[in-house]
Amino acid sequence: MNFQENVPLAPLTTFKVGGPARFLVEAASHAEVAGTVQFARAQSLPLFVLGGGSNLVISDAGWPGVVLKVAIAGMEERSENGKVLFEMGAGVEWDKFVARAVARNCSGIECLSGIPGSVGGTPVQNVGAYGQEVAETIESVLALDMKDGQIRELCNEACGFNYRTSIFNTSERGRYIILRVTYALEPGGVPRVHYADLKRYFVGRDAPTLAETRDAVRRIRAGKGMLITPGDEDCRSAGSFFKNPVLSPGQFDDLASRAAAKNLQIPSYPALDAQKKVSAAWLVEHSGFSRGHGHGPVGISRKHALAIVNRGAATAADIVAFKDEIQERVEDLWGIRLQPEPVFVGF
Image 1 (cartoon, rainbow, N blue to C red):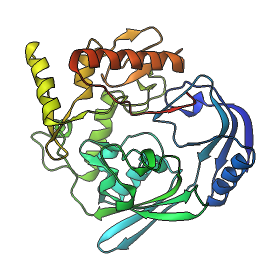
Image 2 (image 1 turned 180 degrees about the vertical axis):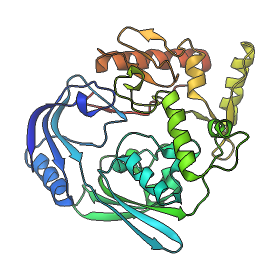
Image 3 (image 1 turned 135 degrees about the horizontal axis):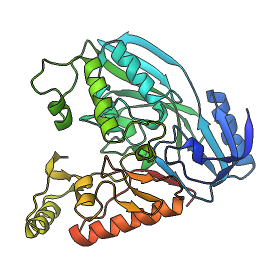
């Protein structure tokens, strides 16, 4: 294993902020992952697992222990019970997997095109976009159990998937290191074009193919600054920074009353039984943080109200301060505390 010392972490993230790691290890196999864990424990050092770096904010102080970058490769596929199973190494770039699945004419993840990061990160937050989420297609997750050092395979149900959550970032946070994810996709399947943006894109056209749907999603994401484009500061972010709040009927009624008092109407859609999911982007914009809003070295993307961006010289402290300001303003005006999506490391 190659242990590097005092490695800057900012270049390994899409936000481009954060201090150094005392040690950085790129692990390309199950054995190297286990060996890194043993090293960290032997040295009494804290361990952080880094994937594609697309959904996190690293503190300016960096990480005082070992950063384990999972770089396990490998793409295997087989047919089983009418599905095509794709066994993907945790270090595989997510969008390369989506491209491969679409090229094989397998549906189930086409609307997740263009999302940055690695395969191993997708089960953690139950990554979703444009009407799909990975919980719908994940067959199983192979992971190293930090409790006893054993490698375990968890079925879909055992992962406890919910909206942007799983056991990996809630009840069992820090217990598992994901090594491989198996997805069950539909051969010859029809693309899912249910989301409003996609419906508008294809209005008046014949039913799109999987490839056309993938291309549309990437174009839509690019238009919102959600497709990584070198040199574009609107892409220097962690993607959508806040989760869409899911409200009880009482909470939703309170929000609607506040909006009505301002002659506004809340955009919403049914979610999770009798609850309502509302747009975090709408709440941010209607709290004084419009697209392009500047706040010194940080701001709001010119293309997407939900993306906090690094204008080029931001620190992690700048980002956290701006995040706090948005949360406080939204809560003051709308009675809702927005929850951030990124993982905060070293704070």
